[in-house]
Amino acid sequence: MKHLYCLLLFSLLAYTTNAQTITGIWKTINDETGEAKSHIELFESDHKLYGKVVKLLKSPPDKRCDKCPGERNNQPVLGMVLLTDMLKKDGYYQSGSILDPEKGKWYNCKLWLKEGDPNTLVVRGYIGPVYRTQYWIRQQ
Image (cartoon, rainbow, N blue to C red; front, side, top):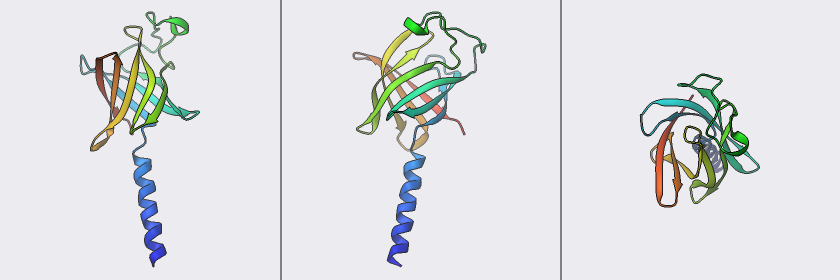
């Protein structure tokens, strides 16, 4: 009987841990307009978190990033990786970067699930003490 309780406890812990993952598809919400803009797929590779655009909601699917720097300049936004090298540390994903394709600027980034709401992702991009925060919604 004791073993059954332990098995049940471990099963519940595994389910809770899996439910708290941030990988998957997220709908981005513009913090300035409140409009949904795109769907971003968050995925892990080499123990780091990345995000790529998998759907554009307000732009044509052939939209190009004409303001993006470097290798992303004039490349299609759809399919573009714009969240890079995020590491999980102290309960946050941090130490990575996020690209705002509208402004063509890279920002330092932190990500975390909103407390009490595992379907809302807090996305904070910042340069020094100045930051912007968006709330992305998990897509089922």
